[in-house]
Amino acid sequence: MSSATPRLNLGALVAAVAGTVLCVGAGPAMAAKLVTSDTVSWKGTYSAASGAIKVTSCKLKSDGETPVFPCAVTAILAAGPSLETKWTSVPYSLDGEGFSTGPVPLALVKVIPPVETYEGTGQCYEVEESDLPGTTGPVRYPCVLKARLAFNTAKGTVSGTYHVLEESTQP
Image (cartoon, rainbow, N blue to C red; front, side, top):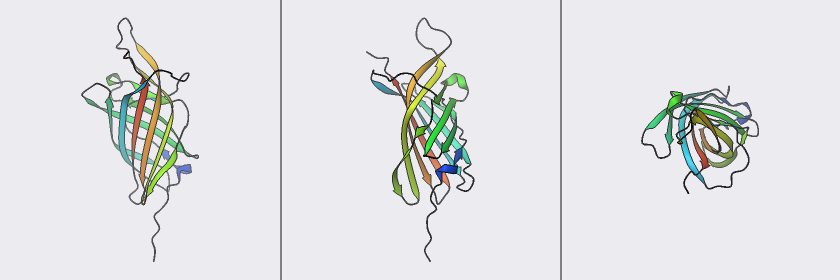
């Protein structure tokens, strides 16, 4: 008797993930050198039948900073497949938030049963308190979101990594 590994049905998968950082939207294409601003890593479980995801851990690492911040992530996977996501540091004041500006197309890049790995790149924006001299209040920055999601279809687990890229402020 052969036991087939269940395949992930991304058309029905809706993910609500706990994590920090928020990235949504982006402006015109960026010509400057892009550097990693934040890295958001999270893990959770999902139900292939309902598409529900429960995040069990999330951490956010901001460039040039020593602490790793707790975070919250909300993500929706839809047909295509594509990803729409939002992330926020917890509390918000630690490192702001980010949003995808629209669906981030995902491509299946690797299958080593029972793990299916998807990757995609899309536009986003971050909102955080300004640390630039002479500025006050929250500032909105355009960014690029690189997402990687790995689903273990046998165990019902998922892990995600977001690399948030923005223009370098260095000459």
